[in-house]
Image (cartoon, rainbow, N blue to C red; front, side, top):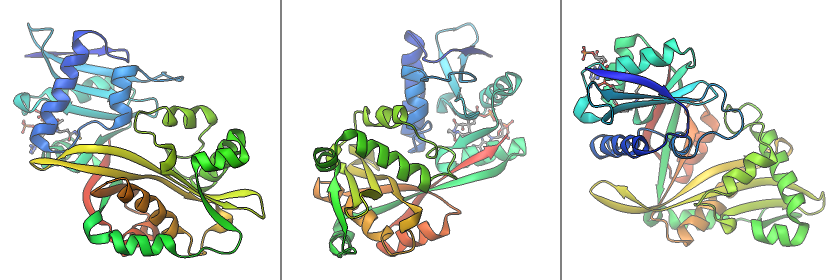
Length: 317
Ligand SMILES: CC(C)(COP(=O)(O)OP(=O)(O)OC[C@H]1O[C@@H](n2cnc3c(N)ncnc32)[C@H](O)[C@@H]1OP(=O)(O)O)[C@@H](O)C(=O)NCCC(=O)NCCS
């Protein structure tokens, strides 16, 4: 009924357009993006250094090699994402993609964005268990603006000052800012599978993204000690589809506070300063992703007015 082939990333030619159509059709039906940004970029642009293990599996209808009905992508961290065109579901395409990933020996876990009922049923049929859970939380401008403004305006201890990225670069130079930014990031996220252990090249790659907004990088600097204390890296989504219409969205992309400054009540203002920037730029809502088991962070966001809107899970395969 269908064939599965393994191809290198990026996916080229006409097949790339077909893969995008499968993703678009799944979004139209499920209302959740089936592949996250890193996977979509890998399909379009390939994987920078260390492409070892990264692979794309494409299911096409038998006899119609150009007709893509499902796709699975595995990145070098051995995590996969997969999606089947809704018009071809419940015909074993998903099973065949899993078999292909497994026989290639490249996959340890599969992301299920939104953990939609189909993904739950599919995982159940394979006997998979949840290995990791990420929450998507949201706060709305109309309801939360005043509280956020108030929190962002709270004074922080004497020598700590807020700056945005361009202001800090002008004051201290780009080398200093990047070195400090990476130092705080790698200290705050030394436990985190994707956000920890960043280097200059990774930072620059993320800053090269089309959504990057230099004014949306808010920094808290200890002037006396001459060091960065924390940063709030926001992401601008602009107008995105939502429900039957669209919404202007921003994201709390990464918030990091150096361990030496944790436990002093600086976390909430650090979040609020970035959210205020996004509301000020016109976001009707701000979202963020947080590990479900990071109870302290989840509670902080809830107190500020964020609520859970989606759950993304990794199934161990
Ligand atoms: C999850 C997904 C990949 C399944 O693809 P598929 O090609 O329909 O799956 P298969 O036909 O191979 O299904 C295999 C088995 O999984 C289970 N299953 C699949 N979809 C199901 C559903 N909607 N409800 C309950 N069980 C389901 C069934 O046991 C099925 O066997 P059966 O049809 O003989 O009963 C597809 O629904 C999808 O693309 N969802 C959106 C993206 C996503 O969630 N990806 C993460 C997957 S973990």
